[in-house]
Length: 384
Image 1 (tube, rainbow, N blue to C red):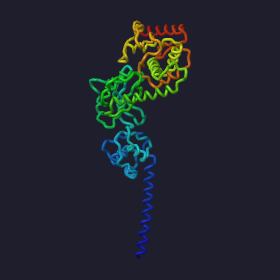
Image 2 (cartoon, rainbow, N blue to C red; image 1 turned 60 degrees about the vertical axis):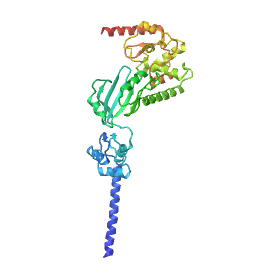
Image 3 (cartoon, one colour; image 1 turned 45 degrees about the horizontal axis):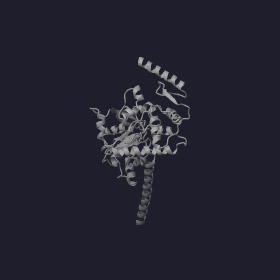
Image 4 (tube, rainbow, N blue to C red; image 1 turned 120 degrees about the horizontal axis):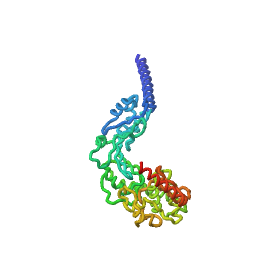
């Protein structure tokens, strides 16, 4: 009898082990299988939250099929205590294991709300935007000018959220003075910039920052990036390029940057200045005259006067030979690359054509016709 009972118990234990093994295999399969989420969602993990709260939120969103398996999987992989606060983009069909990795990996939030401080050539703006997970595009929630008397409620609300991201977007062609002034409006940064960095030394780009970062550290990051871009371009320069140093290359790139806002034209504009330098001609470019007046501190806001075109300043390329002594703005990568790899043309003149671009010419007669046409366009616009 005891032998019969022992046999039954043994059989039961064997069956139990097989069942337990089957459950484990099933759980592992569920944990690693494609999830039920039909379109991406933005999962916000509050500071101080835990895996139980996250699993409930994920189940409510339809992102996981079983909260228990999710929590057991996190515990089994020793990630249960590694949960990171933030907003995380959970892609369509993400498995439980992939979601666990997302919410424990750390780093900057991958979705949610972002405040962008835009430093532009003629204006600056603060934008509050939110990522739409379904389209992976940002949707603007509010926008206002720095120094506004009243700030939108959307801005005040997100300032209190720990997972809000902050970004500084610097436009190509801004001056170093404009960047320093723009950084003053980034109220999540700390410290002062005691000296305006050398013109041209800051790379226009988008920079993610965190609350408490110093303005000086952001400046250093911009300078390091611009130095790397410039050195890379200088290494690829052709032997016959009529500039003698990386500094001169940066000066030329800044002039190209300020002369056109049409990306496709950079190579042609660069070719005009390269051809003029090779021929020993003066560059005769208006943005250098403007810089001689403003020193990069603000926008001129009007047309140039004939007296200003004739007035001698270190930057007035209607008066001086060759390049001015410093850059006249902070050029972007594309303008720096155009300076070392200009289009192959015979152009030595260009003038606005009324479309936002320019009409290029090889001879003075051709250029004069283009100028006459531009004057007609200007007159028509004044009449309208």
